[in-house]
Length: 285
Length: 259
Ligand SMILES: Nc1ncnc2c1ncn2[C@@H]1O[C@H](COP(=O)(O)OP(=O)(O)OP(=O)(O)O)[C@@H](O)[C@H]1O
Ligand SMILES: [Mg+2]
Image 1 (cartoon, chains in turn orange, red):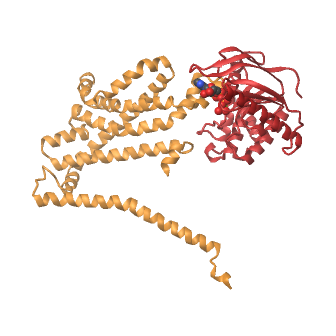
Image 2 (cartoon, rainbow over the protein chains, first blue to last red):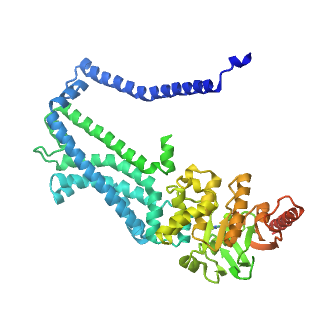
């Protein structure tokens, strides 16, 4: 009766799926446990080395000092964060809307694109810090200037990505549209913009973190006090007062916001591209 | 079914690309309404070039190409009479099957209500009614080609241009699609210009075969295929035509090597 010793199909399937689950778990473990472990080691070194070497907190604060400072000055830190978040989001949205709009405009006219694209490239290389004071002269200290700086720094990557995408249309698809006598506008809306979507999305991902850098830089230069300064302003103040732990807390808060913002934009990008685009599908693997 | 109305006319057509490549030289050919004509020839002999001219996607360097007695560009600008099926299905990846088929109707600005009905009915014709909500990436190569054919049929063309549409498919899929294409051709009473480098395909499908030779691309032979549809691939007659077509193909290639 050999039949009995042979496992049924169902059992086999069960076994193999168990194996898969276990393998999946191991992968999961390594993928998450590794970085977490690295972080723990890093934090403990950071905690104990200043103590061992007797480094003053205003030179290098320990993680606990930073947390304590953040908790103590939370009533300052949280409003500053909110302001920076607000400025960055507005700056980013502006650069997305204006950037995509201008790109579409440029791409729909060969003459415009050829004449203006070189300047778009050159403008991109101008260090934003260098022109920030001019913006302050023009628009005054505070919110407006900061948003404009944040907008400018995020604007160019979106333009160059969108233009590249709009010009990346497959030749056969272009012919298809020609064959059906599609108007310029139809080709733009139904072919070029959808085809450019993955490029636009990667431009947005670059710009969202740049927008934060822009607004913090803007706050250094154009920040104003009175509870209206963002993280950048708080950092300059903390530096002057040698409140190094609080300065660290501000910097970390900015970084965390950057990560969250990036993740949100990535998520949106994936949702937009998910239904059809190969690059989104491949990225998921 | 073949009557004498002229659909496509090549008259002393030369095509020289600006790279200096002579893609076509002195092409003279008249294609009548209802014909299923195949351009058969080796790679690089100018088959696609000729087809693109008929579609108004390229211009002759010398000579004239006429479609329905008019300039091809004028024809595509003013009517839905010409459709093109590309070698890779050339579907828009962000559109569903249904939306891909709707595209020509949208671009041509046909009546919104009837659009969807038309699209669904052509999808039915190519046997894809159950997949209208799928995206191209979810389909097999054969199904994608069916969608592409459905899209071409959607605007009810009188002239269907096909550039090696089945070249990338496996033999079984290709044979089914060939059969379906013939059914559609007979039902819709279109004229079909079909590009291939496969002799069997040419003999199976065409009422006439235009054999071309390369460098420079020229017409080397015209073969009328007097076999009734549907054709049997195993009959002696069929084999005879395959041999004849192969021979003139070899002949045209041999001449190329002599030059
Ligand atoms: N846009 C172009 N610019 C320059 N040369 C071209 C262009 N398109 C085609 N050619 C050349 O013209 C010749 C004919 O090309 P064509 O694509 O018409 O050949 P074909 O018969 O369709 O070949 P295949 O079977 O490989 O598709 C080739 O030598 C090709 O290199
Ligand atoms: Mg070709």
